[in-house]
Image (cartoon, rainbow, N blue to C red; front, side, top):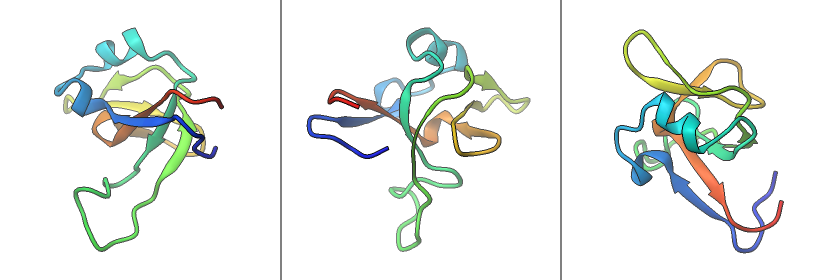
Length: 93
């Protein structure tokens, strides 16, 4: 997916710090357009190439045993922490 004019990326945690899996699922159904950062966010670790996936969610979010809320996205095996997810809003796909 490529970004189009008028799109914005909004960090899930910036919108609502401490968002739970249930909160995420309430407002963001499967198929929600996102940018996912598996491993680490570019604003946390500087100077390293940060994997970045423009994709959609493929499952509802769930909570791991340690309490971390995660979601699965197309193109990546396993869950990605909601702190590593940006929502893509606006624009045309």
